Image 1 (cartoon, rainbow, N blue to C red):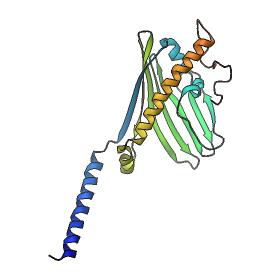
Image 2: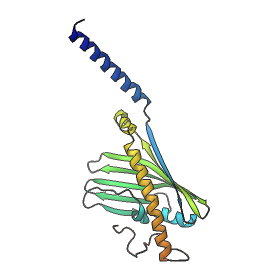
Image 3: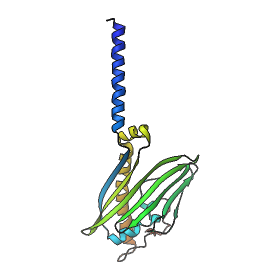
Length: 208
């Protein structure tokens, strides 16, 4: 067998094996993703429920910073603690929202999504914050998830970059939530401040 023919056959076999491997892996890639972070928050359940249920407080401690161009503005819609209560960001690049789909004792469930200025849908998914009394505080479990649309997205998800970023946001949010609750307790010792009133007295959605 001549050297060129041998090289050609080896290359063809290698390429075929690579394609076959890619197809097999693609068929077994997950079409959905989900991540969760658990932390103990030193706070009474009723106080935690009031803050979690009021999206006007979230910009004080929610670590996901939405950038839709300058300026990006955040507004709160609907009544706190009810289905449809939403935090909406708008800017030159589009619109993003996080809206409650279920509110129950010990759990808040939400949908989130982005619509780009040309009408195309960006990232979207679902999440929940569940909590239960644990000693003098609460065990909080924050979960986010979504679906991978198509093979390319599934391959992207296989590397886990999005999932890791979500876990970082969850962890940072829970740390900042603890700090926010402590600030509120100091501002009104005894019975705590109202959910939507920051310790410093500025509006709840003031820039940090």
